[in-house]
Amino acid sequence: MNSTDRRPARSARSRANRAFVARFVAGIVLYAIALSLAVAVDGSAIPAWLPALLVLPAAGLMAWANVGMYRSADEFEKRKIAEAILIAFAASVPLILAVGFLQFFFLPALNWIFAFSILMLGWVVGTVISVVRYR
Image (cartoon, rainbow, N blue to C red; front, side, top):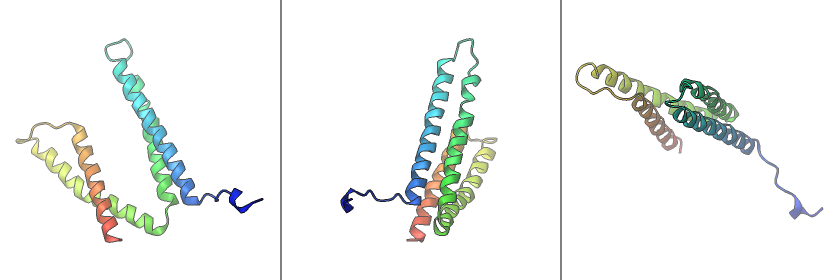
């Protein structure tokens, strides 16, 4: 057998990455199907919450993907991930609580997705800070 005929062995990291992508994409697809079905049955005899139940396994798949990715990381990667999540939590929770409190006085009622956006933006900022810090 020629040495050029061999395929390189997959590393544990690449297997973990493939599993993460497969689970996460499956969760996103299931999520999109659930939302599409909920919109499609709107106004029909079928209650919209019934197809929206597909969101539960979709969220489970995405959570499983992220937990599996975290567990497959080494200590340094885990430290960076934990720091990014901590920064996101520490920055977004006071902002979300302040916005919710100020809605009682003068801010207009905001959609729940606004709070989710603050949390995701905090995660992005936390990730950037973690990457810069450990460069």
